Image (cartoon, rainbow, N blue to C red; front, side, top):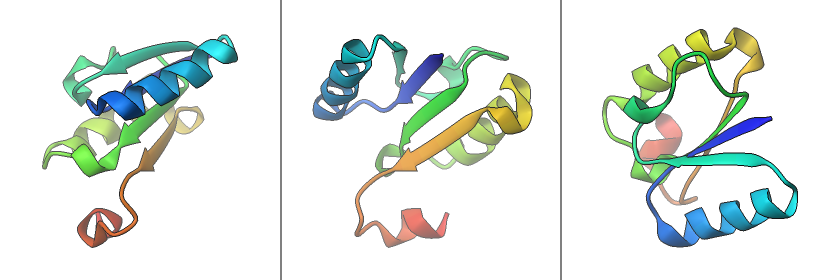
Length: 87
């Protein structure tokens, strides 16, 4: 399984990386959706608290190119980010 983490927070990155290593999961850490390779990956973890206005459309396009409905995107972020929940 190929997993991508989209986010720049160092604490989040280190925690996700530690879990991936422990479970021998191939993880690639990226700073923006523009860095996502087309047609690759099965799971994308996104720190939605760091989102930019263009992230939603870019992530939707990546999902279509990657594997359609088989490519999962998991968004996470601050529970008090009301605007993020609305998006």
